[in-house]
Length: 250
Length: 222
Image (cartoon, rainbow over the protein chains, first blue to last red):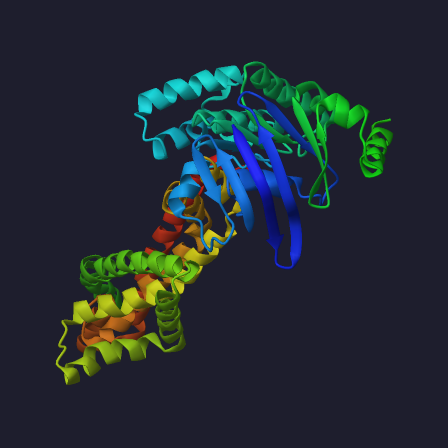
């Protein structure tokens, strides 16, 4: 379970998150949508402390971090939180000097200190799951964007996180490659993986989300089921944003 | 060219080559290895957030880059005995060249580390790595590839710079050639000959550089 309370984040004088509260049950999928600059990626990056909040608290399982009046978060807590989360990046960020298999094994070997054979076994199983068993010995640059992103997902899963974080996982992909990545994410959702996904794919969001939050200007504007947020939003701002998106889709 | 000169060339080739292999090359290798270690350490310190070590590292690079190598060698070999530090020519040369390589190459290493995309750090952090693990497993291997061409440059420079050790009485290849000139009275011939041998060494190293670049290039499309 994840619980975020009154989270604030500023970059210099620019306040990007202005008091975010949310809760996510184990096995559920939370999708974050909103216009660019609304703070959704920053919020996601706070989940694994790639951005350190200025105020508020994050609870993930039995790890509880309070940022209010804290100068520097202890490295031990940072690592603890990061080891409970996995992240899939917009631009994949695979390790280019390692093979696909190496990428998926890396966290298990360096962080979890698993024996090589066990790591390899788990990595191969994950690659099979994302449909890339035959690419195990390729290097990332030899793969298409969609394949690279599926490796990214396998890499994030390999350290057995409690939550998977997706930062616009299909935004850098050619349109014809988006489907294969979304399919993998949907499959994970069906298997009960807890996930937080930042995306611009509204149809996918509606399909996969248990909860959607719509962010605007550092606040949560709408929060609820896909039906509530996408079909019957309460605020005029939300309606405006959704209309503009559906306008673009047509 | 008359027969006498050809005979001198042939007679001196082996002693010169021998001096190169026995003294110039070891001096180069030892100095470069220590220098490279210094360079990586200096680069890491300068990229860290430790204030005092950073100042020291910056000072070191500033002094070494801002003064002539020849002056540094003279201070180490002829100057330090005044304060009771007497060094063998080889030791003095290794210290001088290592410090020099360390300072110049630290900038190469630093630039190579900075050139690695921020997303690589974040990906390493996201699987739970510490800063040290990220550096060792993800950043440095990629930075190595970026830094091979400029480091090879430093290495080739060093091979030639070791001739400066002749001035602090270390009998490497160039000093050997000076001794040969003293007995044969053929400066043009002998100094050209030793120049060609330096050229030969550099060429071999360039070939090695190409090989290394190709090897490290296997994972990159660019």
